[in-house]
Each structure stands twice: as structure tokens, then as C-alpha cells.
Image (tube, rainbow, N blue to C red; front, side, top):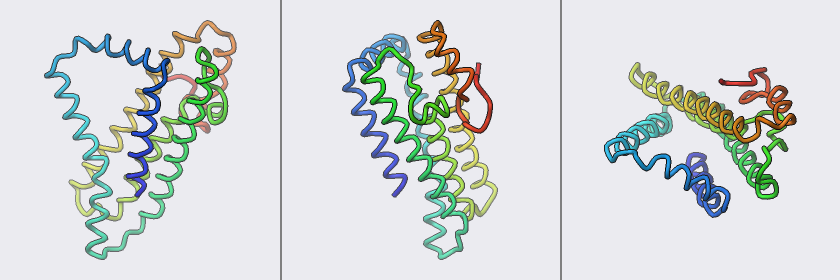
Length: 201
């Protein structure tokens, strides 16, 4: 159910965001930047994303299979709790940033969760998929299951770190000349509120 909620929330948020004129402008810029991407490259990207999400969903599939066999699954509750925390975190962060940017389109978001960490939505995404992996640990019966599921979660975690680094570069271009933004970057960690890591560059 949480995986379904994740998909519905993300799809709904993306659809709603595309109605935003500011985001439409950013989307147009991105489309121009990727206009030279060939169909072969696009196909490779689509296949890569498909493989990634197959690996990410594998823990849930293995858990369902183990439940059908009435096997003891000791990590499901803990994993689901982490998933829920991650889902709530990214949902609240996205909503806070969306509302803030609607009123302050030219300012960086530093309210709500963004007072504690600069990329709380990415942190929520990382926690959610780590929770999926954690929930399935009791169902990983062999080396292949461990390798494939771990590959998926490590890949998405690295991807989120890379996304945070990309956002940092983009925000530096937009707001880097503002003294208040430089103070914000120096005082608020980029991904983990308890880890004093302020830059991924």
C-alpha cells in the first residue's frame, strides 16, 4: 500500500507542478537542452530506469512471496516504518517548497523542513527506498536476492546524492551572489540534518 501511495503521490505532484508557469519555463529549457538526444540514447535511459525500478520493487515482491509461504518476516515492520517516515518527509517537503515558491518565485526555499536540511525531499526519497530494502531483508533467501536488492537501493541512494549535488550547482548559479544564501549554505547541511556536510561539490 505504501508503494502505491508513493506512486500516486509522486504522479499527482508532478502533474500538478507541470501546471506551474515557472516550472513550465524550466521544462522548456530542459527540453531544448536535451533536444539532441538520440532515440537510441533515450531507449537506453528508458531501459535503465525500468531495470532500476524492477530492482527497487524486488524486496516487496520477495516479501509477498515469503508471506505466501508463511515464512517469518521480522524486518517488515521496521522497514515499513522507515518507508512511512520517508514518504511523509518528502511529501511535506514538496508541499512546503511548492507553496513557498508560489509566493517567492525568485528566492530559495529556507522555511519549514528546509530550515534543517537543504534537500529534505531527496532525504525522504532515500529513506523511503531504504525502508523498502530493509522491509524485505527477512525474505532474501540467497546471494542473488541480496545482490540484486542491494544494487537497487545503493543505486537510488547514489542517484539522490547526485541529484542533490546538481541542485546545489543550480542554486549556486541562481542565488550564489546573495549573502543570505551563502549564510544559509554554510549553516544548513545539504542532505542529513545530523551530518555537518554542507556541500557535495
